[in-house]
Length: 98
Image 1 (spheres, rainbow, N blue to C red):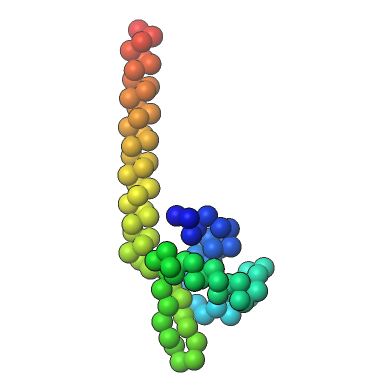
Image 2 (image 1 turned 45 degrees about the vertical axis):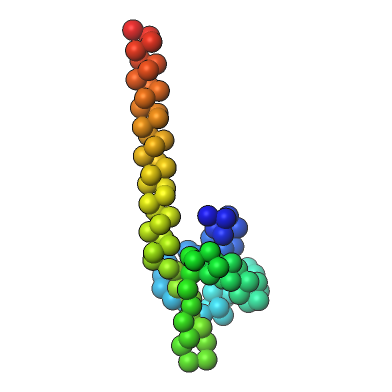
């Protein structure tokens, strides 16, 4: 999650939802330099959120589906626990006012 804390990395991640893209194409759609995009991609790659593959002379970056599934599972569990706690608090308050 720390890798997605940076707004530029989130923007790159969101651009990659559309499919694999090279650094230059990503940089065209962002207000940062190509070397900066490469650095952000390195962080995302080290976090396991993005992978790369060679396509001729360029590298295509894509979202790593297993990482997205793990993030979703984490947030689903977090949300479920939060809702259960809210429900328990509401029911407790309701019983105390009766």
